[in-house]
Length: 168
Image (cartoon, rainbow, N blue to C red):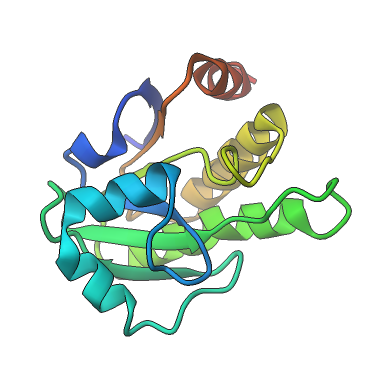
């Protein structure tokens, strides 16, 4: 039975097959979720990320989880919000689609996402939640290898936006 869940919490503590990192284009760590994942994974993650040549917005790359309680980290780069007329919705959808595709290719059954682009990148939370959940539902409808997707959200406002979008 496939499911999509939302929880409030710390994505670095979740015991799933893979977590998604809302990375920047360098993949070398940063603030927010990205910094927390790099910190929890340890220096090995940074060392491997240095060899990957960065990542374009909407694309995704995979590494081991190192000191995290997960087998894999999927790094994806969300769009910076510039008003919505610069391909932001398509890029955000691609972040989810490409991350889920990498999960499928690597035998991942359970995967957790943060609210990609909703922090420093300024994406409107309600719009981002709708795109994230719609893209995930569409992917799961056409792919039977992933059993569970969890959106792990840090703030009450982000949680509420995803909860109301999940109910639609």
